[in-house]
Amino acid sequence: MRILVVEDEKKLANFIKHGLEEEKYIVEVANDGKKGLELAMNNHYDAILLDVMLPGIDGFTIVRELRNAGISVPIMMLTARGATEDRVLGLDLGADDYLPKPFSFEELTARLRSILRRSGPEKSTKLQCGDLILDTVTHFAYRGGKEIELTTKEYALLEYLMRNKNRIVSRSSILQHVWKHSFDPESNIIDVYIKRLREKIETDPNAPQLIQSIRGVGYRIREVEEKSNENE
Image (cartoon, rainbow, N blue to C red; front, side):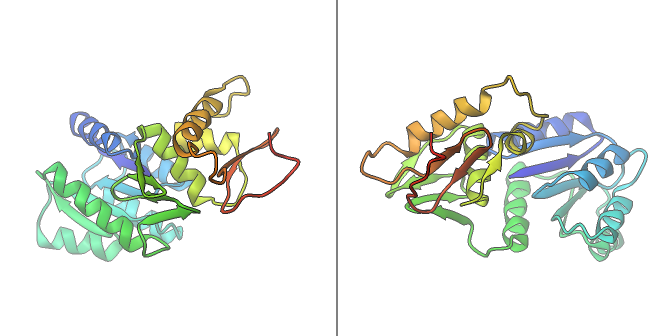
C-alpha cells in the first residue's frame, strides 16, 4: 500500500517513513503543505498522514481541498494541537482519524490499519488469487497454506498485481506505483522482481502458474490457468 506523509518536522517524517517501510508500505514524504497538496491531488495513495501546522498550506486546508475535489483517500491528522475544537474541525472537514503528538509508532500503525480497513472497498483484509492469499494488514503471503517470506518491494509488487487481478498492468504503471519513478525502457528491475516472486510463489510444478508475462505490454496475475499465445 502507498502512503503519503505530509510533515514539516523532517526528523519525525523520516522516522515515520522508515518505520512504515519496515512494515512493507510504500512511503512518500512532503515537508510542506503546497507539495503535499500537489502530490495528493495528482497521485493515488491508499492513505495520507497529515500534519496540521505546515508551512505554505495548513493541514485543515489540505483536507478541505481534497474533499472538495472528490478525493476520498483516508486521512489521519497528526498534530500537537490536541484541543477538542481542533479535532472536531479536522473530522468535520473530512479527516478519518486524529492522532495528537507525541504518539507511539505502535498506535500510529494500529490506527492506520484501522482506517485502511474501514475505507477499503472490500471488508476483507485478504487478497486472493487461486490458492495464493495476501494479508494486507499483516503483510504475510500464503500459498497452499504455506507462508511465503517477501521483501518490501516483493510485497508491494505482489499486492499491486493482486489488486489488479486478471488485468494486464503495464511496466510503466508498475514502476510508478511500486518504485515511484518514471518508466525507463532500459531498466530490467521489474523482470528481476517478477522472477523472484515466481521463484517464491510458483515452487510447486503441479500448481497453476499465476504470474503471466504479456510480451511487449506488461504482466498480470490470473485466477485460473489460461492457455494463450501471449505467454512467454
